[in-house]
Amino acid sequence: MISDEEETSCTTCDPIENSMNESSAADGSCSCCSGDISQPTDPSLLQKTEKVYGSGSCIKKRRFLAKWFEDYKWLHLCSKSLKVYCYYCRAALRSQVSVMSTKADPAFSTTGFSNWKKGTSSFKQHESSLAHRDALSAHIMSSVTPINELLKD
Image (cartoon, rainbow, N blue to C red; front, side):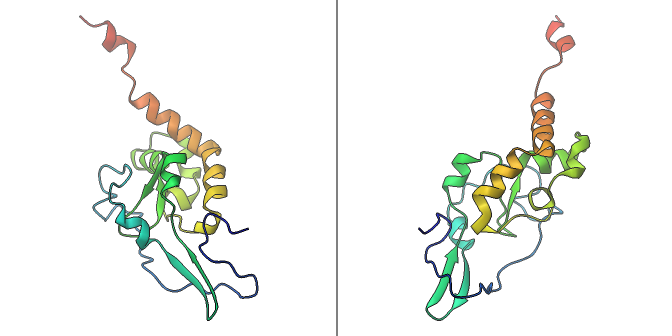
């Protein structure tokens, strides 16, 4: 059975990753990662994430899947690095509002994630991590109006 991350399948060859844009946007130097790091709206980015492995008749292609945005609302695809990040973990790390933000998986907070073969399992694992849940809680709490503000006349 071909996984949803693969377009073709071959079990006899070793994957050899072709080179692609590996620049890191961890510092927020690209326009999509500085300031608002919400989901991108440019669907053409999805095709650019394609990676080709193998050679000859044993070619595998993997890329970021649009359905992952639906399943994992916290994903952010960077237009510069072509990697995904966790919106909440990156925001918590930048604003230093969460103690756990420094313990977040670097693949989702600083270096970016692009191992599309393990996308679904890695996203599920990250979503259940303590660092992610803490960052999400910090985000929710930062958007709540304090009670003393609500009671002011």
